[in-house]
Structure formats: structure tokens, C-alpha cells
Image (cartoon, rainbow, N blue to C red; front, side, top):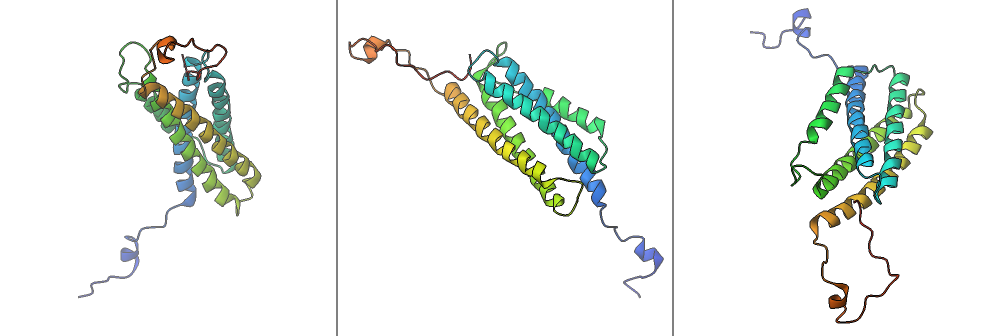
Length: 205
């Protein structure tokens, strides 16, 4: 008995190699959905803290991350990759659902929300940097992509990660440590508190 049939019937069961363009379409649309979620989240964070010490940094990040999403759309156009809007919309729904995570408070914003949201944003920026690296590899052989643009985006992602980590560290300190409440005179063993010595700025009001 022939255990290894040949001919057209056997070849019909052989898996065809994946289409690189199709894989690129799935990959970039997944990242576009993530970018949409990230833009919604960072804008909401910037609004929540616009009057606090972290407001300017978050506002600048919101502007940059929005620009990064536009850059991704431009790369998709250059690579003839269509936007799959249902996938993008699903990413936005996921971001809104993430707001329902328990944060220790029922009615008001919790300091834990700051920690969780900054961790989410930092992970998102790390993922975005991986995307730019993948496209940077493709740019070595595909003239439709500009390596200099991708190098610039990679450098910006590194700066964004640094800012987000600094904000996350301060948010964690604020959320998980108990502020000192003893009077200044008691802490100084009867000596009056010195004037003009600034304390550590709070991350957000």
C-alpha cells in the first residue's frame, strides 16, 4: 500500500506559505488598534491631571503619542495596508472596559488608577518601540519606508518610556506610602521648622 500518495490530490492538502502582505496587514492593524487605545488613555490622563504637577508632561506625551499614531497610518498607506476599522474600534472598546478595574474607591479617582494607567501606557510605548524596530528591519530592503523616520520614532519612544517611568515611580510612591502627619515642631524636637525649604512636589492633586 502506498502510504505517501503523490499527485494533484496529495498536493491539495499541502499548506501554502503565508502571504507576507496579509501578515503585515494583521500586524499593523493590531498595532493601530493599540495606538487608538493609547491615545484615548493618555488624553484622559492629561485631562485628569491638567492642573497638577504632572499635567505638562502628560499633555506633551498625549501630543506625541497622537502624532505617533498618525505616523503609523502613514506607514500603512505607504505599504498598501488598509485600515480594518472593526479591529480599531474593538481596541477602543477594550480601553474603555479597562476603566472598570477596581481601584480602591467607588466614586472618586484613586491614586492606584494613576499607577495602573501609567504602567499600561509604559507597556504600550514598549510595544510601539518594537513595532518601529520591526519596520526598521523592513526598511533595509523596502524603499517605501524611510529608515531616518523610524530612527527618530525609536528615539522618541525611548524618551517617552523614560518620562512615563519617572511618573509611574512617583505615582507608586504617592499611592503606597503614608505621608508624614506629625507637626513640624514635634519632628524637630522643639526646634521651629525652617522656612524656604521646599518639600517634594506631589505627583498630582
